[in-house]
Length: 176
Length: 192
Image 1 (cartoon, rainbow over the protein chains, first blue to last red):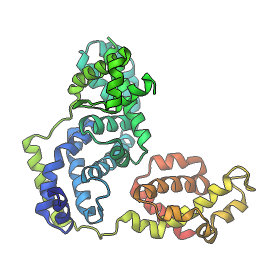
Image 2: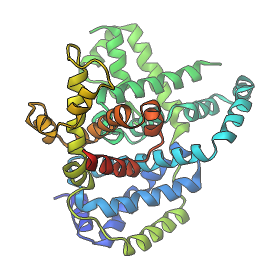
Image 3: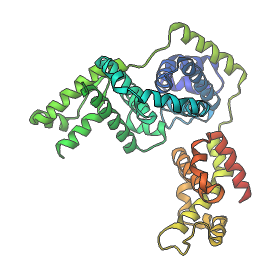
Image 4: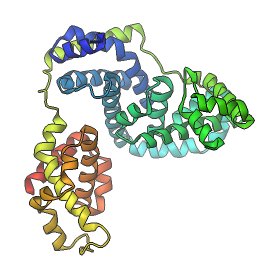
């Protein structure tokens, strides 16, 4: 039995020390994903904590059919999705105004940025699904099967999202 | 397999660790200048994309998070072994899934039912016995969590679209949390 498997099984029986070790092991990866999705550090910290809390509560039902990390990513993505829905509802009117303002002169903004800043900006502009898929594949090196499971989508859809994200980022780099 | 296929393969084997093509793709790259250039561009992209590296927690934030999680889990009980989705499946999703299945069959080309609002269709939607006797149901009953989750989305979409708020179904689904949807399905299933 692997070290992680043992920790999961102990945590599933209520062992808070074992669970704390799992939190230490994954907190950076979960925070990185949530931070990418929200671009809001305070919200990302809260959502990371909520993710682990939900994982703790549901751990007895985790049957290890997927990897623990995939399962955590799935919880984090659900939490983030609900957060962004709430946030977008609360600021709908303000957003409408801001988006019009931002759209006034996007090219001038981009021209002022360096090549790498453009890429970071392009990443921000990706639709949430593409952003999440790119992050999970590129930085967490997850298999497309695991990404599909975390996103509750098909493998081919995950691959398409990844390819589309890469295409957009590459285009932005080529856009001198 | 053509160059486009090989380039797609290269896209899917690219991570921040580099581009790691399989042997077949590697052999093709060696003999194809176009794909070699594509491969080199991808390697350059991996280097450039380093700027997108995810942000990390500071040591202080990491410790604060640990303290917060430990404090919370001390007062929050773990749920029973049976997952909520499985539990939900037994007493809420299953009847609605059955209803949606009948609806799907009714709407298939060649079906006698043509109107989505007809009273005949409503009778068919309510027919649990017919749904459970159908050959299709066991596939869903033996489905894994992912299948059931997808079914939940399909089912609730169809149910809401056709039975509850036809004009605003999409809006409802877009603005309904999982918890709200589960609650809604519970109530709807009680009506069937």
